[in-house]
Length: 523
Image (cartoon, rainbow, N blue to C red; front, side):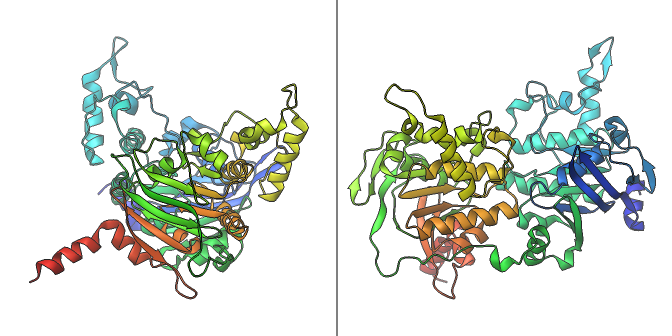
């Protein structure tokens, strides 16, 4: 039995962070935060963006030195903070959300980057393989040590990061939002690896905004709020209401906003999509969206939800079907045509396809309507643009000291609200929101739900694409379900009877079709 496994049986904490504080000038990022982690447990760390999670982990990893008065203990022995090399020697490894691999190097070279086995100054590939292969085998990984990292999927690259941590005999591994860019299958594989690490006595500190992951993985959950420690819950005590209350200081009953009234009877459609497809990923999709309603689109990853939205918006060319707005068929050659007609689209990839991260908040909000500020000589009226941005920041509660700072400096939730503000400046009749709360904290989620509800009350038709079923159930009036590029069903809500999650999952997985086939086949 290893020393780590003995520590698991003894129940001794491998890590204790006591009364950790950290200030930057006049800003207090951490205020007397304590955290205890045991060997062989998954300890989730939750809280809104800005709560202090990342700062606490940077103290642990040695990137920051804690203020006087606090201490970090490994196996009951105090250690010095602010020294990354010492932190590694103590078995601490951090896997950040943005992976730090060298894509042009091999798996083995990445695992031992900076400590490569060499002979006469030349990297010894054979020795690298001999050292790397047992670690990959220990993690249950089957790709080749000599494979170039650039050829791996995101999920496989995540595994290489974990393998690299294992080369330092890590005893405490911090994972920061590790599933953000992973498919469902890659996420399942990651969870299997985490279970294996637990069984070997390794402690995992798991940072995530996704409640379903916390329920599945965590043995305990600690919550930070406003730079301070709120409390820790054991697995048996976990519930959404408790976690939300601890993170945002209010009850779950006010989390989802659904004060708008969905159109009754047979309302006139604002948006009518008929038979739209691209002959590859989307096939013969038809639906209506009404003024003042939130229409959800659910389905498994890869079901064609985003592809359908891009066809409607003109981001990708359709080969069949039509898009009708207010009874008029549109000719959409690209996104500009859709926007001019009154259709707005919030991309799921706000950093890659949505925001200009090196431009200011004001520039990002105004970029779609910049022509409104051009005078007769083509000179821009920057004062008007600033006023427009200031109004948007106030209306959507975007937390910033100035609209002149780069939008990339904002938290994920505030970035998302800035992108929504840009869409609203085009005065749309229909807004398609693709994963609007992905990668944002629970407080920002609640604010985005409030915005969606207010837009519906103003009579805008909202099409909400989401992989988060509680989000669809809590916000949408009805939901379309997609599978393999087709709309396979619809689930509606009514007063006192919310959208049924089981019905969505049954349609998403194809269980309905299988049941019908069995019924037709008979005994």
